[in-house]
Length: 174
Image (cartoon, rainbow, N blue to C red; front, side, top):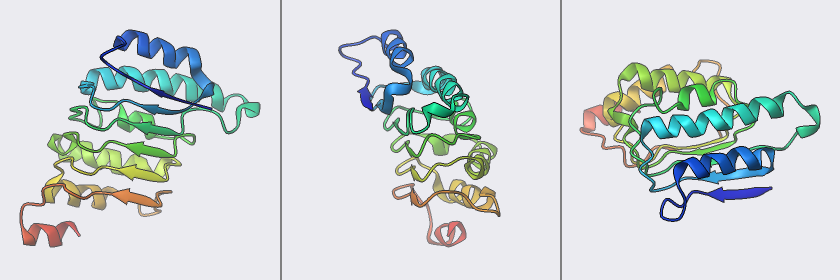
């Protein structure tokens, strides 16, 4: 299994996507940090990964293969939907760890946050890091309220430094 990391100083984004396609099931971990991805470029990466996960899912002998750890930290992502994160986790039984810390995902609409939280009930994700995403009181409340009543497979959830604006809001979110 391999770890592949995007270095925007030495590689174009198109070449990076092509490498992810080429390595396919051999990849175990993909890291794209501090690359100013934006929602559109993130969506392009997640499309490539989703295609690979579908191929792996159709091949029983590929059990244990595919990207299980994805780090998209510090990339100016603004929306769970427009970045492709909701579609990527929905029904995904390969990805185990997702890092989206230090983005701006709390700037999206409540419905966007709720859709992401709801999709967590359909995947096998065990670790989610959403630290420092400006979720705020309303975003945190929306997230927790939208988690499926049947639960999720998460065993680790990181939400610190999400600019909780007031003590009363903090209690509401909790």
